[in-house]
Length: 100
Image 1: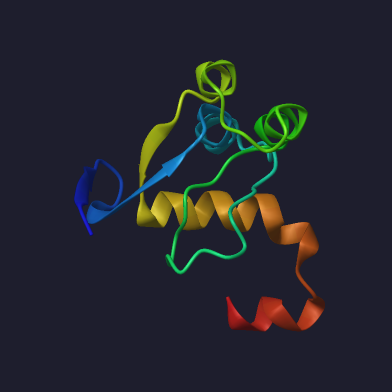
Image 2: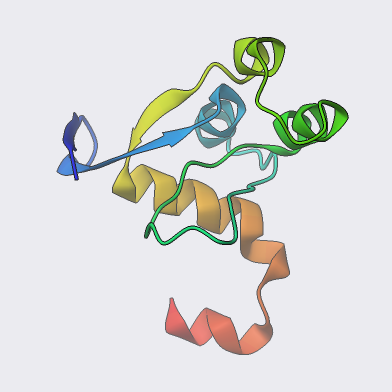
């Protein structure tokens, strides 16, 4: 896996997310976190609720128009994990918080 030098976390595995997930990290605001359920990757590419709705409107295709809205961004693995946790925290069962 390729590495990225994150200003906050140093040298980490690279991941890819839509611009809205990055915006959510900056604002501390969850915008949703979707990724392919059938992926074998530890941190598959992820996208927000808006991008998920746009892809659904395009019959599940990542069209040029959807990609223009998504504006895929590079994140380090730890920033990805932070975004995922922030967005999916409400989906966790009470006992999963003990694993954090």
